[in-house]
Length: 350
Image (cartoon, rainbow, N blue to C red; front, side, top):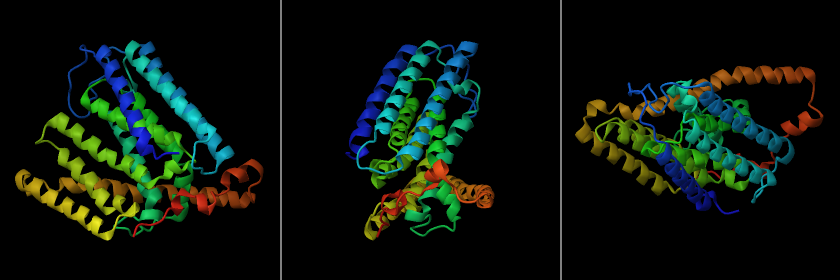
């Protein structure tokens, strides 16, 4: 199966183009005034039962369908292959069908989940996804310049085994949060979501664990966050917080997992430092604390999440030990992926 970088990006671009075409037809002018960053502007002033049911019904159906497919794959497939399993084709088809449904829902009812939940819930779901990726990949690429953080092994194991359910929720929830608007910020966001939906459909394939493909998905948040910030507040706004924040995580953690040479990594790190000096020479070094906010939040959440999850995992393990060894279907679900096929056995960078 070809690398997703070859075909997934054109597919996501095509779907984003469809969103743009649909958005041109449904753009609303009767929305309430924008009251600031905690207000989501693109929601109806007077929602109805039907607008709410269309959004929540579509979301719940989409979510349950993907969770069911993930469960089936974990209990029936469980083997990584170079090509697609039949269940992957089903997952791609299901996601495409719900993309079409959401576009139609936007045309006829407009409202997404934003009508009933905070804008921070959508942003927080994506942040949680990125934090869990850092946790999961600690064993392969390390956390700080190639060195592993002291994270509980069982917490990492649980995250690797069940992350699909969490990631599916984060992506599908964010997808249905927004109506199919055609602003630049929405289109960039939908493009990113389409890539993540494709990734979520490729479970138990080699493509799903391709290091360059997964790195691209992680780095996309840098591009998305910085561009949306520029669009919202202009070139003098808060875009450096997103650009240098996520660029910093790339230099500290992400670039150490794809086999880049030591020289290349030093050049990338040097580019980051020079860019910070260049931007803050004009912006003012009194604002340079912006660049550490996102890394501090994400790395802090990695350790906080580990501390919160570890007691739960320990309790579940203790209960299982008291009940004795798993048998039958339970044993099948708990059998580890063979070492030669485990995504965490990808080679470390030099």
